[in-house]
Length: 74
Image 1 (cartoon, rainbow, N blue to C red):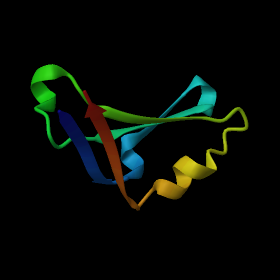
Image 2: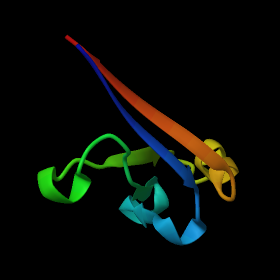
Image 3: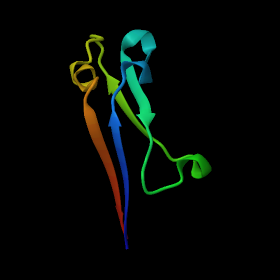
Image 4: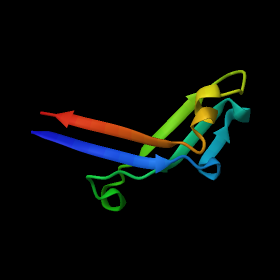
């Protein structure tokens, strides 16, 4: 049996937080399709770690539509 969870989001800068003096950037705006996220606590997070604090990939996602897919195969 195959189960697919998908998140389709436009990355908004307000949904990206910083931790560890800016070395970590975390996008937490992703809701998933295919599960009831509110009931089971399942969510999708993108996390970038950059000791130079530049985060070029995470920064390039702002304003872009992204799709995150989690596939579970039994």
